[in-house]
Amino acid sequence: MHSFAGHQHRKSGEASPKITRGLVLDTGWRYDLMEWFFDTFFLRGKLQELRQRTADLAHVQSGDKVLDVGCGTGTLAMFVAPRVGAAGRVFGIDPGTQQIACARSKAARRDLPIEFQVGVIEHLDFPDRTFDVVLSTIMMHHLSDTLKRQGLAEIFRVLNPGGRLVIADFNRPEEQPAQSKRFGPGGSRMENLEALVKEAGFIQVEMDEMQLPRFPGHSAGFAGFVSAKKPTS
Ligand SMILES: C[S@@+](CC[C@H](N)C(=O)[O-])C[C@H]1O[C@@H](n2cnc3c(N)ncnc32)[C@H](O)[C@@H]1O
Image (tube, rainbow, N blue to C red):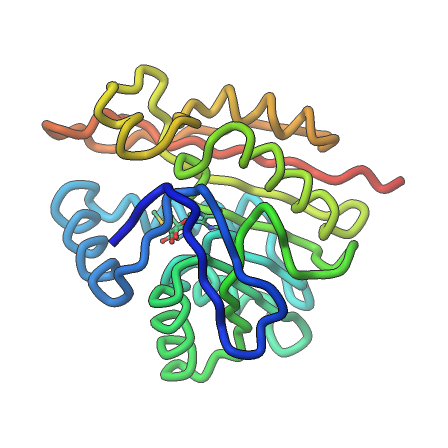
């Protein structure tokens, strides 16, 4: 269902296959069901709160052009779409073909004009300076540091000057070996991510934190946010 090893997806009409060494999730509706269960009974609604705070920190507003990187089944993109209104646009990319199919059908049922595409953070299929805002939730821990660097360089490229970036993820300063094995070699330390965001050329890099309920078998007692801006010149 998910793996690290050179995941490849080709959609009819796509010029090139999408290959990533990130941890791809491709469970479609089952992801939503599992997430609902996990969020309701263990995290007590904190995942939904995390998405709301992500959009708030990015000051998503009417007319914005927004990209959700690693959008999964599109929950954040659908949350943001009413904020940008008819004057704005929302895009979401994810390497999981079933996640994208699920996101498309959810958006269609809600009559939300969101553009979901199969794609990877390390090769964003958009021209330079396309977006006012780039968002990403609980996705960066799926990537090695090398992929994170490539992905942040791509986000920097597709953002307009002055564009905003907000990344939210679990913060596991002391990662267990089993978790590193499951989630990939990048780990999920927000300080590490903050340093990589600065290294990519972003300014006004700020960190924020949100406490999560603790429960056995899950070491992420916190979620973290990194907010940043692309310089105007
Ligand atoms: C835990 S899910 C989070 C999905 C969504 N952002 C959310 O908040 O529900 C992580 C997502 O990152 C995606 N992912 C893995 N490697 C990726 C890559 N190289 N580029 C973009 N997304 C990737 C996975 O397929 C998965 O859908």
